[in-house]
Amino acid sequence: MTTPVPLLSKSQFPDDFVWGVATSAFQIEGAPLQDGKGLSIWDSFCRQPGVIADNSNGDVACEHYARWASDLDMIANLGVDAYRFSIAWPRVRPTGDGAWNTKGLDFYEGLVDGLLERGIKPYLTLNHWDLPDALQAKGGWAHRDTVHRFVEYAEGIQARMGDRLSSIATHNEPWVMAVLGHETGVFAPGIKNRATAAQVSHHLLLSHGLAVQALRAQGSKATLGIVLNLSPMHPATSGDADTTQAKLEDGRLLRWYMDPLFKARYPQDVLDHLGVDAPKVQADDLQNIAVPIDFLGVNYYSRSVVSADQSWKTESSGLEITDMGWEVYPEGLTELLVRMHRDYAVPPLYVTENGGAFKDSFENGRVHDQGRTHYIQRHIAAVAEAMRQGVRMQGYMVWSLMDNFEWASGYEKRFGIVHVDYDTQVRTLKDSALWYRGFLGQTE
Image 1 (cartoon, rainbow, N blue to C red):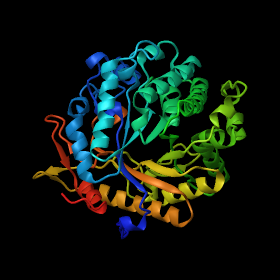
Image 2: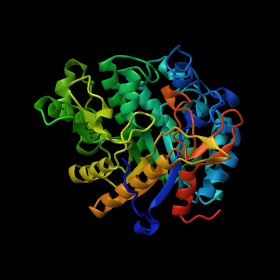
Image 3: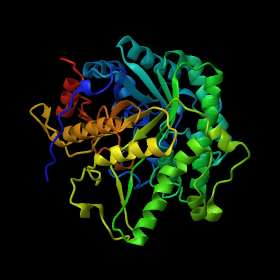
Image 4: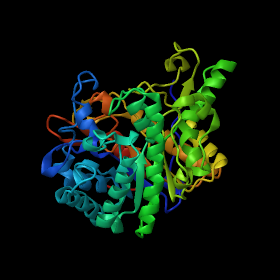
């Protein structure tokens, strides 16, 4: 089924709307022990047999640690306003709580200055999942002490380069770190304990709130916020069982994070569901979590169709499916953004990640990725529709700048608008990148 591609123009968006591309440190940098870097939980997780689909790791990835300057030239060539990237915490403070690593700090400071020299705004994420392994050995995010180590880390980055950052996000997708990392165990650190996962989610939110307050106290000039992965939850059928399950899953994914951030409470239905596994919350924790923020980042890829019947499959819908097995459902992004605007007193919203994994073929120096191009076009149109309905949107960022290490999928899934030949590290702009560049008004 071919869906018509909407007519799009950058002029449909305000002049101050921010257009960007996004990456994360572990997925592109490589150099896991170079220049004094410590190991992260993902470095260690990748060494466990069978946890990564192609038995790969992030040791080389896209060699961005060595190729950062030419990568920044490539980003500038796209004509974007902003680059969203993350710092590898163990690269700048190898054990998470001991000495700082000057060479690691120098690398990111050079990256920030290099972006500014090219007219690109640095949008920094402090934690994109790669906790120092030394902190995990002390309990990691399940241990309340890690909250305070994160605040110190945030303060250290702010002191070194905060005056040049446009934006700081504390965490990327705390749901992923909590649930996939500590409940299902399919992501680092590979723990399978629901109570631990719930406690981790609370500590992530608490560290966010305390870090925002600490950065403000330091006089941060950057806009401060957090990034959540969110999806509308649609029941597979109109039956009571599916409707009830969809409401619970909405609670576990969206309201579990949005309610404490914007209402200083956890949703009661999820607390009831967790029972004895609910997190231990100390006095003032929720007030600290609900500190005002300047923006909220939304990572959106698809809706979720929820069934109480475990045998029900997404493919049943008849919609196009990406290489990750996810439906292409741009209407869900509009629905999600409008709902957040309606239900919460949200600050301006960014789509901080949006993109699709497709099976690309590299032919005669080109990648004709029509599926990805259409995916991006339709989701940009969905943002425009949300704005038409009154949602305050501040920006849109494509995931991902380039093909990279896709976590438990290894290198088998390609999200990039830039193709990476992992044998040669040659970068090639796909048709989706050429379209995006043209949309943004950039000539070659």
